[in-house]
Length: 594
Image (cartoon, one colour):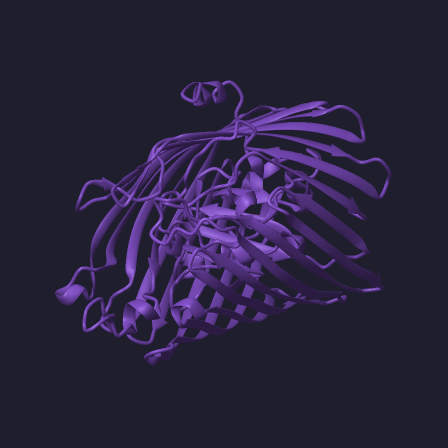
């Protein structure tokens, strides 16, 4: 039965970028060019989840939402709050740039982003852009970019949820508008008793339940003047995560202040950003801290309706601390980087051209150039051909640069160079009618100078190579009553030195969703997910198929109740060797005001 799932998906595939959206309104994409453009006109391979798509998905957190996207694979150590890796087109988790309102949020010490700590109740939309994007965004954008845009609620709303494993969430939002000003915020609390993070194959198995609790806050403001606009976004989350050897306390905070001019030939913009990431694990006597400030300046100019130019400048200051209870401050470092970039966009009849280039200068290893070229050709009204080439890089994190090691072994190396990649993609889009959308993409991304602890005394050196290549198929069909959407991906993320597949990544995965609008107030849905066999450092992880059913009943103008049944076949599977995943479960959500 499991082998037949990918075959069945070929009959009706669709893209989650337009999940349950009004077809009369174009889906907008910001991340690909750093300015809004219709998704259908973008040269990027991208997925967009807007607020209504997030609500209808009934995802409990960002990780649960991302798994619905083509090219995305998830690995989680246990239940809610467990350390999570997100692989975009087979790239390592630290090779995907994660932004919240344009601000970097990954740890400068470990390089990891706290995917599991970002609350969906604070999120307005999520954009996923696949492929190297260093030409506009700089470091980390080898596999692509995931950008989360937080909300500014304009009215009051409320959400209550309950599910298996005593998983409860209560949240409320508030907001209002007066003239050009909109102010809003949110508060939420999640409690989960969870399940044992590890199974008997785990290195520290303890058969107790490992719970999770978190508190999240946000505040936002929009002001729209006649000749300029001002936007402020802030978020905060504190969480306690239990695992089989103890618990961790985490703190994630961020702030962005953005100004945009509306008048003149050049439209100037400026953004100040700040983010904090802290993880304290008493059981291991360790504490990681990141404090990051950024300043972005840009100017955009359109020359008629054919040519536009964007100029960018960036200043980034990063501070990182790693404290060990026995050794004290093992890492206490900071660095500054600056960058300049430009984007050129041209429309010539049926052809669209993009050219971008960026130079980043980092303390320690100097400068890194990152170019990108893209071209599309509207071959016919129903057919569009898109191709692009580009480069990416990842600056070494502080652990790789400065970690003192264990008795002289596994030490960092301050002379490391950045990891670099060069990629190419070819995509064909077919739009035979308003109800159908199909696309197929083929890509290759060669990564070299990968950092590995493989030098003398296992010190960090630039030595490894990888090749990430694959084919992605997306499609969508819908009418006023039914919709079907999904994706399939065939990929080969491989270590070029050992010829082994990269760990925890499947060669084939697929996702299918279907829905029935029973009435104006009631919708029913079904989902199926498939991933082929994976490997985790020598251990085989079996293939798996997951099935889910959903119901969404809006029983009044302001009230709706949602039901979701997950893993209905009670599949026993692993995303990481030795770590458990949820069994069959049911959740219920009550919403007011959304």
